Length: 86
Image (cartoon, rainbow, N blue to C red; front, side):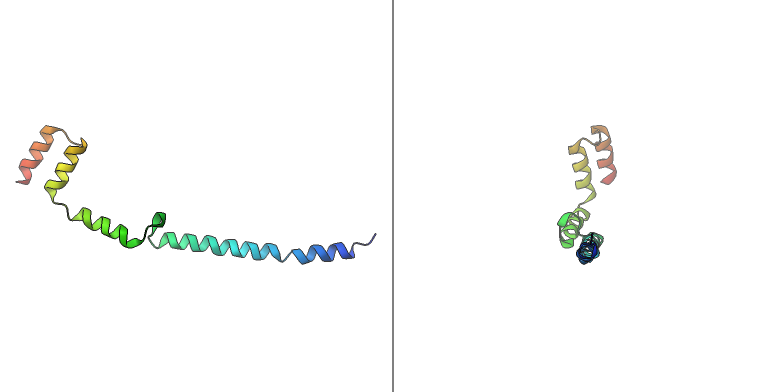
């Protein structure tokens, strides 16, 4: 039996696995770093910034009204807090 040809053919394919591993590592690193830059779920960072700016522009009365409308606070608490804001 001659194993010379079989070993040569097997050794020729051994270079594929390190290349595939490195390509997978590069792909994973790219996806990971993209997530670290602040664009979760594929949204551009400026959309997230705009949403944060619009929330910060609300007045305290608007926030209170929104909380009351959601049912987060009772009517008595709402009226008391509204009186405190005036």
